[in-house]
Image (cartoon, rainbow, N blue to C red; front, top):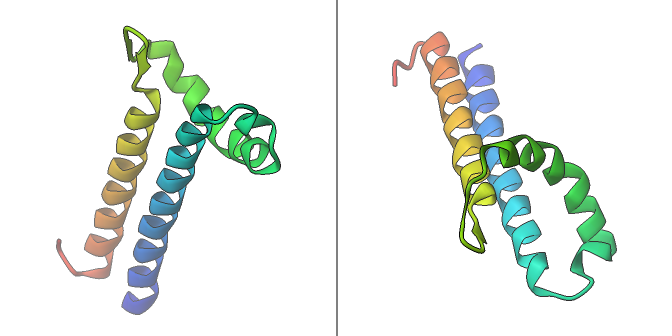
Length: 95
């Protein structure tokens, strides 16, 4: 049972890393003309926009620089760590 919980915690952390990478790629697409209209851009928009639209309510921009994606990456990784630590404590690792 502990092995299953440990693997679940690692899976959650890995998914958070993949989502953070998707957010980073989504941000980099803004540097390329027509980047958001490409197939990859549309796919990334489908998975990144729901979270980013919720965070844009907080107006995380300073001047012309928008820190919404940075806040999303930090938040996703923070929540994944909290969930992983809860799973580790349930498994008896006590991190």
